[in-house]
Image (cartoon, rainbow, N blue to C red; front, side):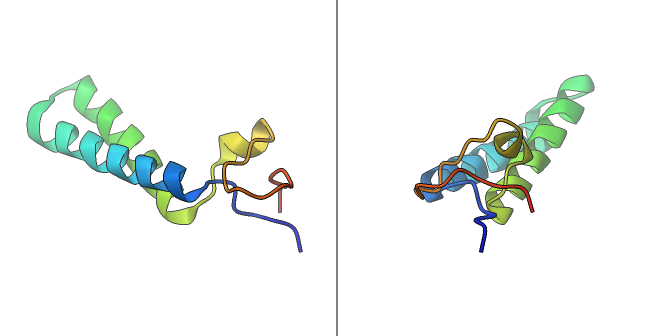
Length: 74
């Protein structure tokens, strides 16, 4: 079976923390276009962190999940 997960545990933790931080910025401090950008980036970070899959990693054939084989598309 092909390895579909291309985001490792440390990478996932960083993405989740960054996503929460960006959401706190978006809904607490920022306004206008900065709020929108921080909200969108926070959503992307949270989704990729929870799912363990990053589409950009697939595009560049990168994997941080610790396996020897590179990530493959489904």
